Image 1 (spheres, rainbow, N blue to C red):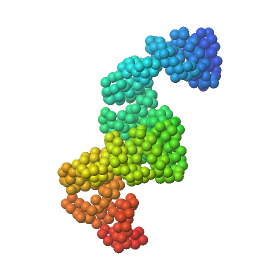
Image 2: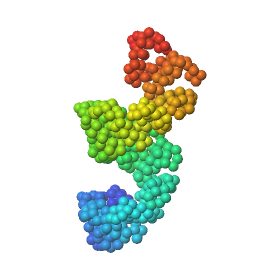
Image 3: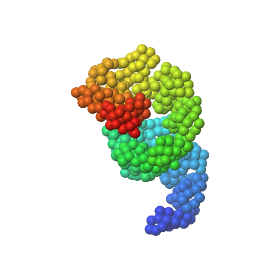
Image 4: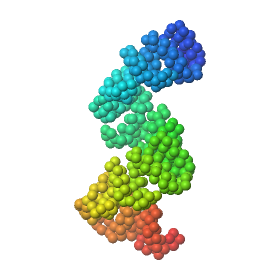
Length: 493
């Protein structure tokens, strides 16, 4: 009949698709009362397939088919009422239509009932009911049901938390082609939620979701490319992925794209482009972008230098819990940048960052405690802060903890071997403090560190290249005269 021929022309089975012809045949069958044709005609109007998109006309055709008991039409019309597309939003009518369709075994309706129950759309949130509806949809093989049920098990929504089961459900959703399943499986692999982090698997999952246009997956895959996590480091590829994520409206993608422009990573350095993308990201509420706008104003990059505006941006981001902004506010009060020097307020902001286990905030509190910045010195408290920050790989904290271990203070037992390991780790990460400490150890020599003027000089040279003015002068003198591990090179000096 007309419906079957229309379906063949829409799907392109047996030949090339011809959507306008399919619509004409659906319309002919719909006029004869075919609820299947009425539903498919509604679908064509909803998504502009063979006709101009018209959600109100879609609702009209779905309504006719739903009235005849067509479960797909009931679910599709429910979706329009849920989103207020072509009709006035009405959660009550949406739920009633979804329930009619679900009673006939429609898995999409079950999934939407789960969402309404989870988010409390049209009533109180009911996590248990949400999980039950998702479970019913998943039992029908619905990929959205599988993904959402996995989300419930990951976060303990209406069910007991079970990360292993969440992973299995995400895998099943991904196998069914669900991009959210791929993405959340990638998150589990990256975070190591139920095992050690596996960046290679995470990157593969992000790539699968990205191929389906998942904006956050594109951003996360860009992050993997930028930092060489599970894939080869490739700044140009990272830039391209961030650009695709930003084009899809990802606030994180916009912020990261701005960062690449600011630093000249994978693209020529362009502070003006960075400003543009930070502003777009900040307009969506991205706190890192708001903080980064503050940095542009502090440094005068693409905008006139304005420390008052910088502080205003830092405050906006800090009020929303951004740790980098909290640290930037603390630094401004510590050093008097655009405001008066106020060590107590600086300590307050560092403390707020430390409460979120932020490594930099912890390290700075350690420095304040060691130096007695806001009261009597407290080496034991300093050691604790350094230890917590060093555990996260913070290079300066590693160097400070190494110094405590080297001499045995702050309640830390003396352990020169561990101190040496920490100094080396911190020096590898670029800590000038650690570079100079290691240089001194090589100059003095010991059982653990054989004396080597050459190694000591190379370490001091690295510190000089990192911008340490005193080391630049010292290195220049040694190069000029060829002393203490340096080959004579007046030109380099």
